Image (cartoon, rainbow, N blue to C red):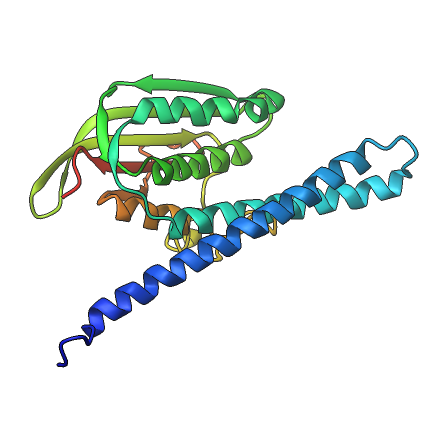
Amino acid sequence: MPRNARHPESSDRQTLAELGLVSASVIHEVKNALQGIANALFLLEHDTTLRPGAREWISDAQRELSRAFAASRQTLALVRHESPSQVSVTRILDEVLEASSGKSAHKGIAVERRYEYDGTIEANEGAIREVFTNLVLNALEAVPRREGKLTVRTFAWNRSNGKDVAGVRIVFEDNGPGIPDAHKKKVFEPLFSTKKGKGTGLGLWVSERLVHQQHGALWLENKKSQAPGSSFSVFLPLKQS
């Protein structure tokens, strides 16, 4: 191989890195444009001269815009690469739950925090925040109004994957309708959604990949009780190897 020639694998990695950078730049610009549209829709929504029928169109547009925001946010999290650092799992959880508190309060949803692990782990904070956001929002959308409940638990846990790996397990359990058995094997597939046209079908797929990038695991649990609802578990190691 000539002295200045690049190794094929090195070239492929550089190409992927460049594509990721371009994708992140494009998505960032798209998000800026979407924000401008969102601001315009907000002003229209509060225009007192607007006809009732037009308000319904604005509501439809805002709903679709919300889906576009979610898709761009999730994709940006997937292509963005940050160095791992020591982060507090419970701090990120508290911030995500606080950010979604308006939605939970509006629906009358009870949110219970049961933290048994309050230490730090080595991870990409942005990626972890995106995963927690996806799982919390999914639960809040699934549970019923006024009777809905979301329980978030953290505890030390060793994952056996050829060898024991020390880490923390985070469980998101809700009392929604649950996921039908026929769909349980598909929930982590791209573009698959149980939200009947309301979801992007990317949230869980992106979340699983982000967790794998942190050398962890994300899975749908089989609930031991007969009560309805879903339970998702995230495992994150204390240190990345």
